[in-house]
Length: 265
Image 1 (tube, rainbow, N blue to C red):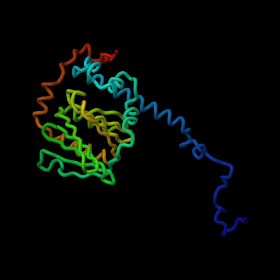
Image 2: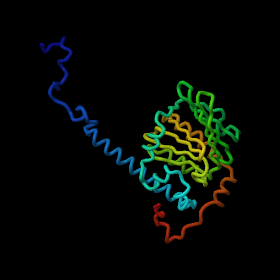
Image 3: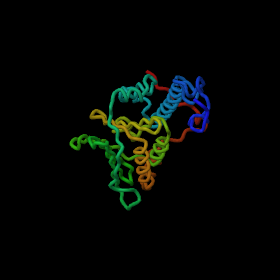
Image 4: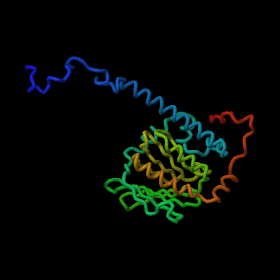
């Protein structure tokens, strides 16, 4: 074809036979897909291990270090000993959990109310998650609603202000595993959040009763944390006093850097 003004390709570079690594199949920005997968898995494994170590320390401080071997659910025992990937195992046990993307709030924080109610629904409204929060104590009621007919409720008791702040801080990460439970740990209702790139899966457990699971979009998770954090920020002085009274004794300076006692069978 002649190189003329009528030729629309006359000013385009000749790239025939030439390609950059990023343009080749199996590459992303010049990096092999296999290498990206390996790096992602290594990063996720490191974060999961850090979460497990943090939880072991919390359990040790709350006095559950011994009882976990006899009273904790087998799933948690396997997680704390590093025998399973909790994220993978929960996803296998609860496949196809509904995705909740629509949100509504019956009461907003800072509007002179001590009680808040939020609902997160699937697009077809066949499944929903309800969250009730009591401003003073920080107590949460989590409900799973199926087909607007059957509801299952989990009651997360009052949580100290320190634990609330720590939970919100951990939930801001792009990836990680976070528990929300009371001082009774697995002896009462508790929640497990698994966050991957701000996309969350929520699991609720009622000991010896029932379980629940759902997924939250990044936007829904951000709305939940913002709404919940505003309520929790208005916590009463009573919860602060309870936190001080129930806090574990101070660790002597010489033991500040000592690792938590390992869980073994």
